[in-house]
Length: 267
Image (tube, rainbow, N blue to C red):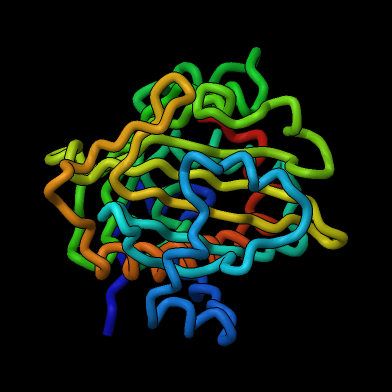
């Protein structure tokens, strides 16, 4: 049996600790096959084409994983989040880095903890929700399937990451959470660019997540970090998709419950 991550006696006293006991939301059965066999790389969205996410409709492959012809990896995941608002989603990324257990309740079986290196920024009363996490770095410990690893995520303003900010806040896109990420012990070999692209729906939001493994974005330009002689293991991409499906399905279930209770708790 898979065990939940450990929790301290002090953490048990926190108002949101009860969510460590919440059953993990189940990934819809129709999505499971996408995590079993690699998708056709021809259907992957290239990192250079990331602004195509603003176009209406959907791509042929909104959920899947593969290794591209250049050896870099790709992961895509579409998550429906009924009852969740754009404000809730931005709040979550501003809020969860302010205490390690907040990350753990997101996925109690795989998230050992995370904390922002910019706590004063995150607790500021003068900043918008987006400004609370733009430019922050989170140090993370989680298990993506190979055992617990120490990771980092540098959350950036979408414009810096090459997204057209003039379209954010429109019908095309309500918000984008995006970062350069990797393992703390080997950042060059593990570098990746992530984006969570949000569109509002009739009953909530939908989340179109993308991961480009082997890349970082610097000054709006995609830079390959993975050495030319290396190839991303396909198992790494598969496990990342599996984890992403689990954590965001659980967040879709968690946010409507926790947001009304904790939205003003910035300590």
